[in-house]
Image 1 (cartoon, rainbow, N blue to C red):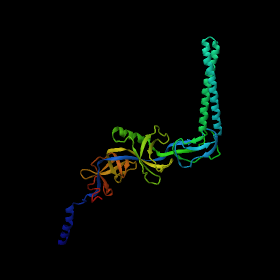
Image 2: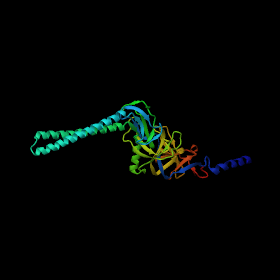
Image 3: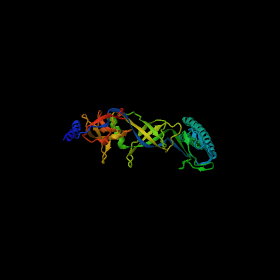
Image 4: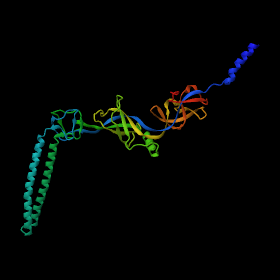
Length: 371
């Protein structure tokens, strides 16, 4: 009896000490949210486009005598690229000059006659009809001289076009013709192409809906934005392009098949690292949000419908689920549009050990205990 009584007392002691069925609160790691300024940007695919592009074509017909450039080299505006056989055009200029000389001589003769008949008409020595004929001849000679001079200018222009010059400065491409080739005035086929690559454009496609949202946020003061937002590039090999660009404009029309708008940015390209047609990734600055609330991505859970929620700890130290609206990622965080505010404690570690309504103790993430 004494042994049984002793065993009963020893077994009752622990139950009375901690309360039957009670367990200490679980410890979880939390992040206390706060408002902060966040630079918003979008990563978009894009392609490089030449700042200026000129397709070189002949303006006169003839045989190519010389090619005067090195393919792939840099050429200056006005630099001669080709020489077309100029013999027939030199002859045309000489003929036009002779016609001008003849027209000037005829003009001198008819002018002298008109003046002489004018004096004689005042003395009634010639008839009015004779004077009118002399005046007509003089005015016709003036017109003939104007026609001859215009023909001379045309011949000189054609002669000048036998020298095919670069219309712009830039990097010249492959020549499609060699010496001895026959070319025609304003033919469809190009002789060569010149691209100005410094600076250079980068065209990216952004959804029309996102552009409208950005404009609405700027108008409502949700975000602040520079007049010329900055753009940073990532090359095809994953390296960052060393020069920063500026957005120039957004296209005024939407692509009907994709629902996107072309946004053009301008970049310096002193080393010709960017080439037309090259694929890049553009980080486009959308603006700064001064009162943003960010929540770590590891704290956010989504159901089958894609609805986001987090577990929070309320003022009584009890776990409370909270549905949220997270619009976009910012680094390793989600930007919260609704459901959370500054001061809320969001659980980021220990989620597998808790359930809604359970009391917990909290450790702030980043502290010695919440590392």
